[in-house]
Image (cartoon, rainbow, N blue to C red; front, side, top):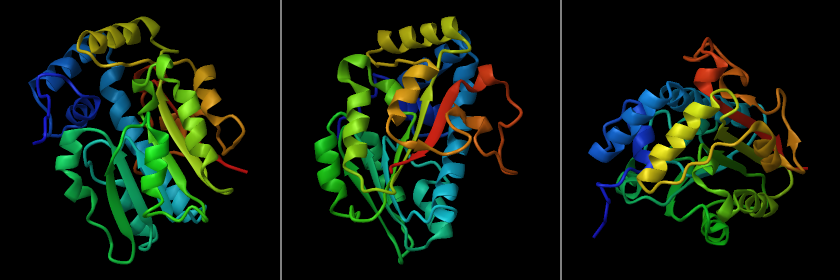
Length: 263
């Protein structure tokens, strides 16, 4: 039987609520609303991050010819999902979604509605177990060809004690040359006191959140060739006509993102 732990907020469900979704519970809504009161950026960051993800997948598929995606920490289905964007460009694209939350598992069917020419799969695994993730992903993805590793708004839910930089390094090391890492991460560079309050709100509810400065986020890309415009706030990364947050202030976005190629 699936244990949803509805009395405890979960990042995927809080994120869903902030994006206007319905797959959340009272504890998630309470955490989100308290976060909003403590820091107005907590309301804008999820939407700007989601728009960035759409642009990144479009760029990787259309301009870099990537047809395989490993999306870790995918969260609840929110259209357009990665497979919808990628297969809209390349119908044969293959996508593996990874998450470790029962409610995401319960909604996995929405993530598996693939174009018949391609494929999608959903795997229940923890970001902190890269060996298991890689072994399972290789059942769907061809690691002899480039893969795009998507780590979208997940690393800030992993504290330093769990060594997120090491985990990302292990994942990237397993990818073939020509693969890409796309990573976004909350920062406290612009509203440090407000983000400390949000971290404390999550901690009180048993959820780890650790926003990081730009220099620490840059370390995730060590040894990789970062694509222009580099590590920047997500609403400033190759904006297009569909962007909803291009005119928002840096303080309200407070999410860095970058795409980098493995030599």
